[in-house]
Length: 487
Image (cartoon, rainbow, N blue to C red; front, side, top):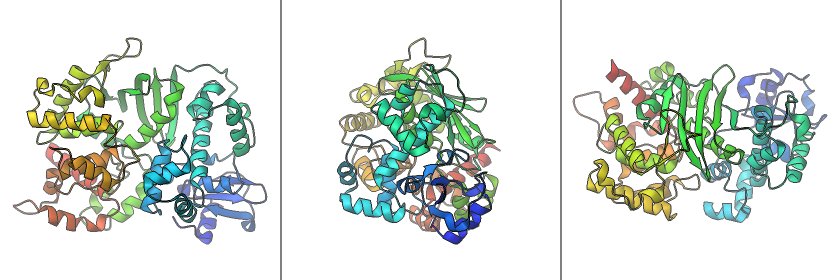
């Protein structure tokens, strides 16, 4: 949102918690910054400054309030009010690609100069790229202090600090106290074999529809959805284990639990969960935009807070999308289960649980695999082998460093991957809110109002007013179509 002082002041003085994460208030008389809804005594209006993000407040010299805990506010959606370059940069920072690399590397990935990148961040966020990355690490470390009993050395490692000394200095500068004093309960510091985190999101959140989407596509042995809990096996770096996720709407958090995974991968697991469950979405703003269309208005009302299902692992999602070409969801699920059983690896017995024993194959595992052995047509098998080789060699990037256009260009260069497949991969793997596979059969069925399906050109034209959130419109239409077909 644009920083309009009068509007922000009214929301802040009115303690309106709906604006948490949309802006931050720095109080010049105390040197503290807060989020809207802070229970502390209200300052005089002349002593309040407003910032677009927490990093901007910290870069201006303000420390986080210990009462309203601004670091627990949902993150500002990367695409809201920013240029495409800044949005891509934010995704790369969130993915940790800037943690160990100089600014020039980040700028080079984006195709701009360092000076230009600093100017764009100052214009759109009021903070430098370095400040945004630093704040991200600090806020995650504070969350670990609150939610786990990890030793301080493990918290520092998980948050990306190279030493305890640097960790202590950063926490003291940001929060005005050493990390030992910030921990809410004086429980003994123990190495946690199971880490639990609360990842905030903006309400409303339609977890029923999202979990139903994931359940229909869950791969036996790799994933399961039951009792309102999503579970899956995963390998992050050298650590393999199981993650569990459930939504706590009353707290406005996704509860993420890690089993068998070390603290060093906690930040990456949190990033993946944020992408999979689309936690950075601003559902109120998205709904207001889409509801202007008479076709979408009743769907938005029926499913408030509908999210775009993301990808835990972009490569896995790409392979499963290819498996789903020209077959039903059930058939694609069966093929994915065969693939995991034939070419995946098993979890250690002490980590596995009943029904979750397999790790989905890595790109290197499939680069030369005999995929016809699972009943896959030869052309589709070759498509997966070529994609696997390209990903393994780093020639196709399915992570946050990739732009939508570049990813689609490289994906469609793989024989057997057309525009529909490439856009669907971008929709889920890259977290692109405007990715839109206009040729999707389900989408065209949902838009059909006569005897014949609308053309791709007609679909593109119909969806032009849904920008920049066409992906959300697509999910609404898919959900409505699935509900009608189930009746």
